[in-house]
Length: 128
Image 1 (cartoon, rainbow, N blue to C red):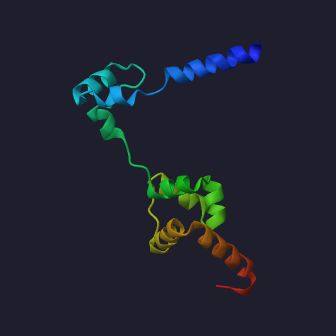
Image 2 (cartoon, one colour; image 1 turned 30 degrees about the vertical axis):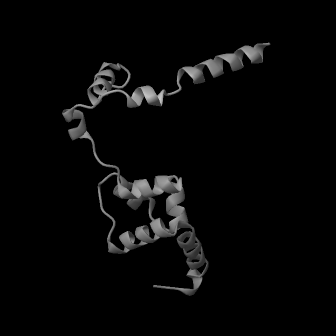
Image 3 (cartoon, one colour; image 1 turned 60 degrees about the vertical axis):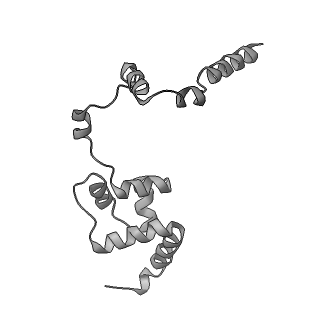
């Protein structure tokens, strides 16, 4: 009995939150803006709010797209954690070599990860 009552509450909430797309499409832009402005939980952004916002770093967007933490991203691709943090927080920009690596990661993340792993296994052979 208890699970049945709980399931009914969950399904009632799901029904209550369904979007009526036909009703929404019938609204004018002015009606939509007025409803958004009246919503106390999510007021529209002011020009002042927008001016304070910063765009998300391309490095962070790439890392998010791959579903990796900063530490895992650095480990997978042989990058410095401090550098990635600086790039993501806008304190520094990747140099040309790092930009090239990041572009390659964006195109073929699993291939580049595999190549980085291979290069690490051969590190003993290379000295700079």
